[in-house]
Amino acid sequence: SPIVISATYTPITLRGDGWQSGVTEQFNGADWRSGAYNKGTIIMTSTAAIDGIQISSGTADANIRIQDLMILGPGTGTTSGINMMSPSTGYSSFSNVLVANFYNCFYFDNAVTGTHYNLEARGCVNGFYAHNDSTDQNFYRTVAEANTNGIHIEDVAGFNFFGGLIQAN
Image (cartoon, rainbow, N blue to C red; front, top):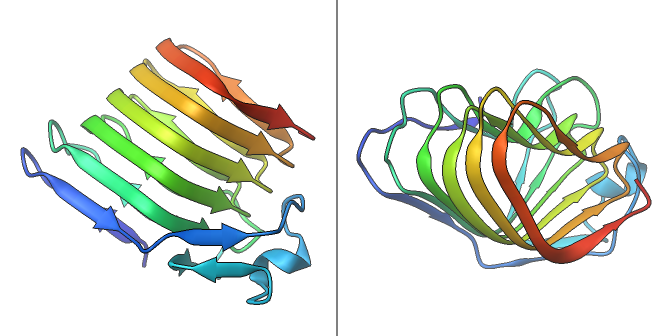
């Protein structure tokens, strides 16, 4: 099962001790599963039908924070590393998080109000995928690398990117 965050009006923080990765392979690259290249706090799923973290519908105004960790996917299927499901949380803040080897690294479905720092999306089909009236998300120092689509945005308002690197997508 994925890590499921489902709370209303309750602040939740999921914090690791940091991460390090030297991998920049595309979706389903063999090095994503290697302990030789990925170090630190890692949440890993090997099942193609399971998201890494689901922030479930009805998690309104919960003030969700995810910090200092890596989320690695199976390299198959259509799951997401962080799935903000519709209607999703308000007041999210993610910082120093690498998501890799999922169909969608970061998936925003009707997500409202978030500020995010030092996010990296690598080796996914969609690095950042946002749709369905997601609004007011601000990204600082964002990296989208070695994805099929670095950033895929449709039917959203107020998705702002300030600085970062988008390459090899």
